Length: 453
Ligand SMILES: [Zn+2]
Ligand SMILES: [Zn+2]
Image (tube, rainbow, N blue to C red):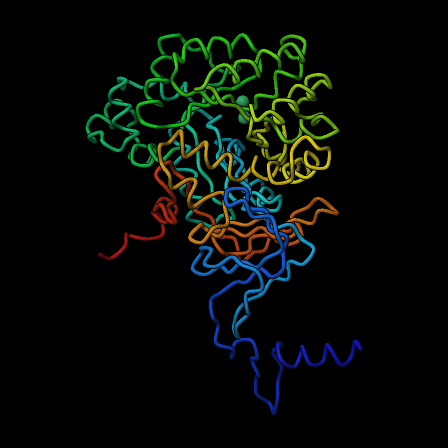
């Protein structure tokens, strides 16, 4: 059995030497350029698909999704039988590539954990962050990454509210940018390619006036305003200052860890704020949703507070999960990307959410929320779903061992069996509120004199 099956496969597929000449069996097959995901159990919440079917990827996009799609000669086929196939996970709050990072290792680990799209809050509070990330994208990253700017950095410039609105819309003149925002040409040019702004309750104490300015800028320029949520007092203040302008509560399960008051009381306050205010949204940390309640290196949520979070998820008050981490990063958050996939599976196993609703917390739901906050439908048509025309970001999961088997980014396999695949190193693009960039020019500046026109 072993002998006959495998000899046939090997002689068809593998290179060898015959009559003193290389026989390149694979190289000789004309490639179709298609990647076919065969027989996976597909859960695509946006398109309400939950069934065994095939997906065809070509040119970095999904070109077909259906039952029993015939494979053609030259197709690359992934056997997904027994595996859960979901849109590539969107982690809209994961610290990666922040200023203090000494290696890109955490980004690679996030890709192994099934994250296809990550948005990193500007904990370093510098307008340099976008140019630093741009350089890494050009040098080759295995996932799509975007950034928020630190609120203190933005408020600390000489720009008026109107200047900043123009800048983030891409309508500010250079003289204003370089005299009032930054003297650095790389930062000034790339600084507006961000997703939003984040305030940090812990590290920067800002005046009401500056907070109001940030809300005005984010709401007018259609950016995400993310707030570090931990002390309910701070969050109550932010909601008051938001005056109806959009406010997204980052790691909104952190108050449940009881650092500032009883965890359950704190969680009740936060959930009520999200429930009662149409313009306020929130996200919970995957690590804190697991039975282990979190990480000792981050924070552990109290059991009663965790119940409040489960209820908020059940009722659809909070619809988004994030990691807030990459545990290997020097900038650690409250959780770790390694808990993303297990948390999604466990919430379904525990009956807190249906499998489809649980998958939606890191796919369709963040895509919808980002599309709404950035007023850009690109985000929920191209991202967070597996419909025809969507970017081919896919996370393929073994439910038994709660690990991603494959992470596919823009049509390229970036990790397999929770290990990085080197050929996927350059698969990632730069996520902005306007869409995705495949190259930024920053990483190539020292290598090239420029591109010929
Ligand atoms: Zn934070
Ligand atoms: Zn964070």
